[in-house]
Image: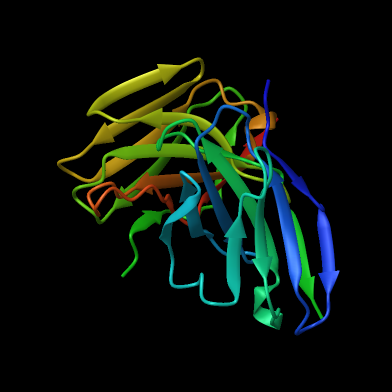
Length: 112
Length: 114
């Protein structure tokens, strides 16, 4: 069964550094998403991406964040200058249409 | 304003019993409703989707939707210890100009005791 994959599984970075989180969505899916979950809190929407452009973003997704689909398979989330409060699990998700979303295993980001 | 509310639990049931999980949402125009299961330290796993009023059954799982009451529930029949997880209710507030995002509740932690 096709799955969303994410790399790395754990990323440790220093405050102020740039990080890029990578995702390979399910191959015939058209919609791509990033969510995050701070430890012990609810899953929060960051951004959705369709037809090579951002279709929606949350208040969390400020100028420090960007997304890109550099080729036909990868979908990336970049955080330009990480803050301590960016420490969280980051989940990529994809959907064939804008309905059922399937999540990847996540990247645990630790900012020190 | 909180948009998706769930009882945080923990909910504890004996093996073989029915577990009932509840969720309410505030956006009356919401169109799509989902239940995800999240094991500790893992990602959300989609287990049920429901789009119209009534019941939808899939194996041991039944999702129920009542749009007038803005209420979604998940029943797990013949609960097994492997069902022990946090169950997340997620709502797509499609009424907001075609939004695709999911809004999640905090989740209900279910423990099934052998």
